[in-house]
Image (tube, rainbow, N blue to C red; front, side, top):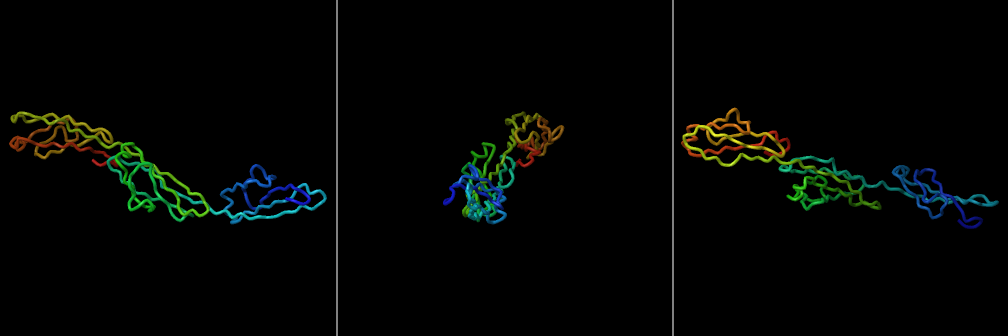
Length: 235
């Protein structure tokens, strides 16, 4: 502002942002808000003040506010540590594309610029119990890149122990079992590669195995304990 005064005031008839430090500072900063993208161009008017006997004078400038990128990496997921299959489904608006990255060193298939890629974590990531994936906008034009984060929380995998090998006399008809299931499940089911039966049933971890004549004749029988009620975990 020059001539009859050196003072002025900023106003905006169609914007909703603010002036910093205030609207009477000639070299102020105008802080845009999301609503400023609606009128396409925000009108900023500088009007002279302390004009004495003169009429106020004003000048107008227009600031075009482009919408910023909108990035969504997807909702957080939960899966089992022995069944990690991370299918991604990210979305990016306004910007021309996006790029995936992680806090680990796993791999994206077919690549990290495919918004619907899949991610294969490393063993280290799986053991940590949580996998963090980030989607960042690319082709942002005048705007800064925007990043959104998605986390995959891993539940423990089932741990199954059928017990130590058992040696019995070939005249024995039964043997006691002592299996255990922990981690992602606490239940299990016994099966046999022989022809014997389980008492009281094959779902009892400390069941008794009743050897058949064929088991005794064979001289060896394999008993297998498999976890059940695994939810999202593999057996």
